Image 1 (cartoon, one colour):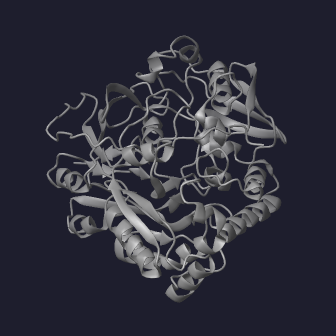
Image 2 (image 1 turned 180 degrees about the vertical axis):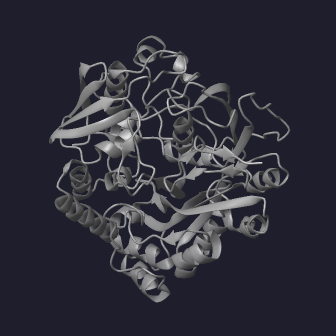
Image 3 (image 1 turned 90 degrees about the vertical axis):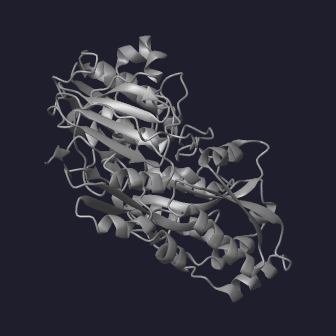
Length: 508
C-alpha cells in the first residue's frame, strides 16, 4: 500500500496577489547576460526539501538542483544525470552508479551519502514525515561505496525512475546540520545558485563549476506577475525575456512580432471541476446527479472557444499524454435533454441544492470566462450554482478550512506522464478522495505492478472505473504556452511544465 495517507496541499500555487513593480532591474553578471522570466504562479513554498507539492517550486528547483535521472522527453526513456548508469537487480532492488566530480554550490562533494539522505527522507523511510512520500513506495538506500548505491523499495515500484526525476538531491550534511538554513538558502548541484530570495522574485546566478559546464546566462530571474496583460506588456517593452501561461487573446499579438517566439504544448495536466467531500451531499449520494452535471457542460466549446491553443478535451481522468491513456466510454458530449432527465431521476426536479463553484483568476488562462460558461451550462439544466471568483490562495484556504463554503473548484493537477504519478491525486493521499476502495486498490496496483502488460490493463481498469464513477468532472488538458524573445535559443519547454534555462544560448 502507498504509505502517505495525509491530506496534501494541492500542487498548484497559492497566489498571494501582491503588487509587484516592473521597474527593478538586476545587472547582468560579467559571465553572461541577465534573463528575466515572468510566471503566472507565485512562490508559496519555502526551500524545505520534500515538504511541498507546489508546481512553481518544483519548476525553479530544476534550475538549482539536479536529480539522479532526467526525462527530457516525458514520453521517452530516462537519461543519466547524477547517476551515470543503473540496473534493476530484482523486483525491489536497483543498483545505481553515481557521477564523480560533482560539487554542491558550497563546494562540498556530491557522493552516496547525499543520495541516501535525500531518497530516504523523500520516500518516507525516516521518522520525519514528508509530503513527497505520498508519491513513493518507501525506499532505503544501501551504500556500496562512495559512488555506488542500491535502492531497495518495500514493494515493487513501477514508477521509481519517474519519481527519481521528481526528487531533488540535497546535501546530507545540510539535512543533518542545516535543516533550518536550507529553508531559505538552497544548496544544490545545479546550473544556477540562488542569490536573492524575495517572496515574489527569485534571483539566481550561474554556477561556474557546474559539472555540465557553466550556463551562458549570467543572472536568471524568475518573478511572479499575476496579471497576464502585465506579463505581456513587459515582454513587448523588453523588460522581460520570457513569460508563461500565455492566454489565447495574446497569441495573435505575439505571433505577429518577429522578435518573439511562441512555444506551445498540451500539458500533462488535468483541469477538472474538483468536488470537496462532505460539501455537496447530493454529489456523493447520486451517480445520476454526477452524470447530469457531466452532460451539462459543453467541454468542446470551453476548449475550442475559450482556452484554445494546445488544449484538448479530457477523455479520461488521466491526461492524454499519460502512458496507457485510454478514452472513456461514453464520450460525454453535452446533452441537455438527457442531463435534465438524469437530474430528475436523481430526485432533483427543482435543480437540487445551491452550491458554490469557485474559480481563481490570474493562473489558468481565461479561468473567469470558463467558470461563467460552466455556470451558464449548469443553470440551463436546472442546477443552482453560485460562481465565486477569487485568487488561488483564498481558494486553497477554503478547500482545506473546516469552515470552507465552496463545493466545486476549477483547478488542475499536473504530472510527468506516468499513470501512478497522476492517478494518486484521486487516492486517499489527497483531500479529493470519496472513500472508493476499488479506486484505491487500483491506484496502489498501478504503483506496484512491474509487468508492462499487466500494468497497462490495471491502468485501463482504473480509468474505466473512474470514468464510470465520475467523482469529479474532467474538463480539458491544459494548453501550456510560453513566449520568449528570439534571442533565447534552446529553451527547454516540457509538457510537465518544467522550463529549463540551462540549455539556453543567447544570440545577438
